[in-house]
Image 1 (cartoon, rainbow, N blue to C red):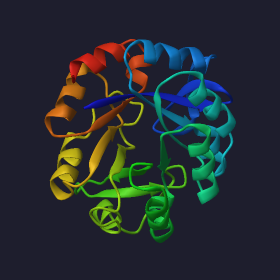
Image 2 (image 1 turned 180 degrees about the horizontal axis):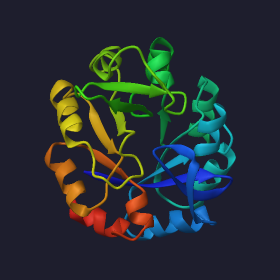
Image 3 (image 1 turned 90 degrees about the horizontal axis):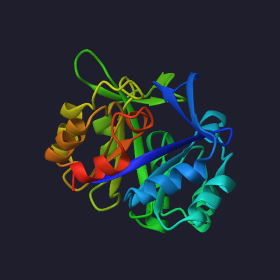
Image 4 (image 1 turned 45 degrees about the vertical axis):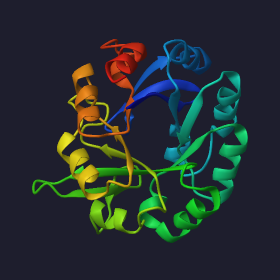
Length: 244
């Protein structure tokens, strides 16, 4: 399983949000290039970079900085935030990003995103599904900064992308994001069972190395790790070795 150390960019520095809320921000690093270089030095093959300003604004904001980071060191970068048009995808790929993350549009404009997948290929896009799980255990996509819910569940959203058209999906249980409460293993296992064609990246709640080995044990292809690293629970290198 691949470990994707996360760099969330806001106003040009590394931060983490609690439950995706922009009024609950913790600032960690003033130098994203130094953080990126540190992850690479610890053995990271991929790094997950998010333009939080873009996600908040609904348009690309920090793609120039992301491009600079992509060119600064030899590492594969998965990046998104504010991706709304095919030109955004083109710009990130041209800047050196290896895989572009498409979030809410994967839910709200699946026919358009399907055309992007056809155009760029399934290895160049990751579809990100942020979900809330209700008391009945039903995962429903969250939209518009997690303030609105789709009128259909995650399974219906995934069904819009048939086997072979999409390869990588990133699933975040928003109730766990940034909270260090452990990933939603039941949900991740259900996705692996329902869609064995997909490479699933776990996101939200990772707090320990045991969380990562549990994700690997149920067949996840990758895990996004942010706050646990920034708060010293383990290092990127320790995470990589734990699931090697």
